[in-house]
Image 1 (cartoon, rainbow, N blue to C red):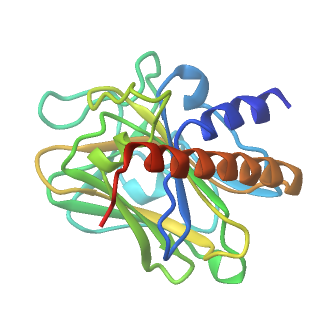
Image 2: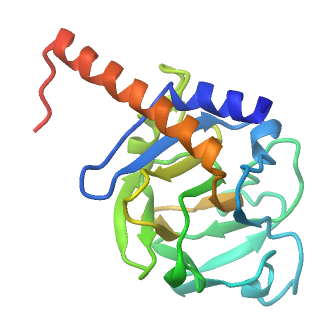
Length: 235
């Protein structure tokens, strides 16, 4: 229950819903606590990149039924940091992580998604550079929403704490009845690199989902009220 309450506190801090895809985004500044967070769920899979073959990158995956497609450019499973190449995303953690290099895209897609899909995808992202982007995919592997690093920082909680030089726990959720998630693609459009770790795919428990939706609804009303007060118009 404590984890549920803490997550709800974050959820009511920042929300972004794309009308066509109904994707909600929460960006929490990275800590060792949320680095290892596991969301409660009826079905969940976590990738921590800590097991498998050390030379065949695609085999360094924890959990079955997922495919890592790095055919577009270069990616790798790393440890430590290399100046100008990649940087450990989590201070205080020396385990392996994924690194997507310059002008490259890494697609993470579940082969089990065609039957059900997921309601929540979360990853621990290193420094949120404006030239990196993340796309949320449906169960056919097609992008339904794409966010640049700068856009992700707009959803930082608590409000006003956005910092592109630090790590974030980024969580994507969908509303009940909307398009189910099948995966993510992570892109580094310029320079090196986009690093991430502890990637979670989950279908939350019904009670947890109800709490999350209630919290998102409260935030939606607050955001609409704020827009009326400040007369901000979005095209």
